[in-house]
Length: 284
Image (cartoon, rainbow, N blue to C red; front, side):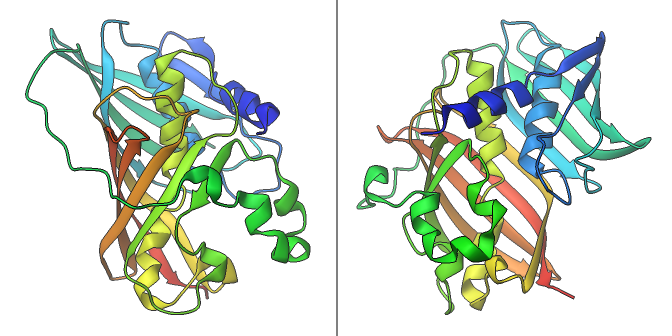
């Protein structure tokens, strides 16, 4: 558990409101070349949600990563109130740095209602998350190579059911299962849990598209970057309890890979679905 890192993540998502529909977000004080995609997605979602009435709940988001984010300057989030209907509300959010958009998000919210109910079943026979190694245990053999990255605070506990990227040396089926959760206790606010899952959902799903090719971004020989990211939220959940992120990659072509994920809680309820496409190419 790293409660300090989790509290820092919650603070990172707590944007400063500058005007009615303008918010400002900061980046963590870390040595990064660009802003982590999950961060800008989570912050943009916070900005949009803060302009929506409490009677609505988030049900989907669609986003595009337009430019690399600069971690050394604040990000402005500009919200456009597209629609407020009786059942649905829509917000469009632009993240801006240096006078240019770096990220675009559309989020849809719904007044909760009863309806038809079915889902895909949770994959069976997977190991319990507590039986799997956490990051520091898993990466101990690479401690010296990782240097400061090894000791960086980790608000998300991510545990691979199969081989993690640093141990892959041969082509594998384009399927992986990862347990994820906040590495501590979150506030009860449902929006916080939605935004933390949005933040965490950008981890690991794209590298599923490397599995059939015997490549790993961990070796520094492959470049990965998110292009677009979509999520649908189906049922309530807590992001500080274990969630299974069941991922596959239907295709990779043209320098792009497509990753999909179904997110289940430990009771087997399907709580969210994810689709992401990104650049995957050999480093130049």
